[in-house]
Image 1 (tube, rainbow, N blue to C red):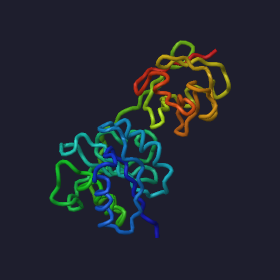
Image 2: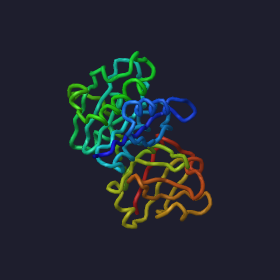
Image 3: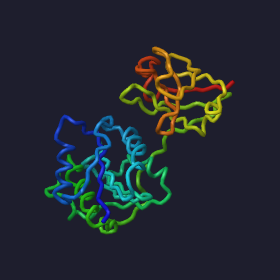
Image 4: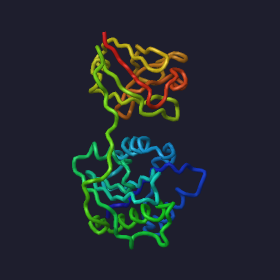
Amino acid sequence: MTRSIITLTTDFGSADHLAGTMKGVILNINPDAEIADITHHVLPYDLLDGALAIGQAYKFFPPKTIHVVVVDPGVGTERRPLLVSAGTHYFVAPDNGVLSMIYEREEQLTVRHITSDHYFLQPLSTTFHGRDIFSPVAAWLSKTWQTNAFGEEITDFVRFTLPKPKPSGKGVKGVVLRADNFGNLLTNLAAEDMPQVIAGTSFKMRIGNVEISKFAQTFSEGGPNEPVLLMGSSGFFEVAVNRGSAAKVVGANRGAEVTVEFA
């Protein structure tokens, strides 16, 4: 029998009861479910940060994992709750674009508008759909696996496109997508955007207040307060400082422009 794994990704933080309450709802419906926290520290209301969090994590879970993603500034409005079958995974989330990286990466997609409200907790709160809609739907799905019972397929779901790198002079221009807890700056530049760097070609990267010309293999290669470029585990280039915060050293954060020129 396939075990039921349900992950949680939210912007709820850990100081309040919200994430714990969601787990209680799931376990009341399916006591055998295994619950894994991806993160509860998505930047509040930040759909791009939520999309990056789930987009970088979901493939490392077993097939048939159910991912509950609640970054939901429109909770209680007319925005739709969704059940998405994507590749070998399932996603339960609001229809606000927070699953955009999933839509971009998975070719086999079925998106359903969840309308079968007998799966919801009652009375239904207008402020906590993570508890009343998304958690119970995930729990019932983990027992029945009958996706068609939750609602009809739709094709007009909300999605946004991640910022794309652009050619710029003798190189490429990108942007910082986020700064992580260590201050590492995740860019939108992937290996295919800068194969010259991987091949060892000299380069100059300008970001914030500094120019970077060193490509490192590990976080430990840079000197004190020396920002370096490296290929991160997410598949995107990152700017890092050995035992320090690149965000502080270079004076940049999310949205900062990144330009790279090759010799």
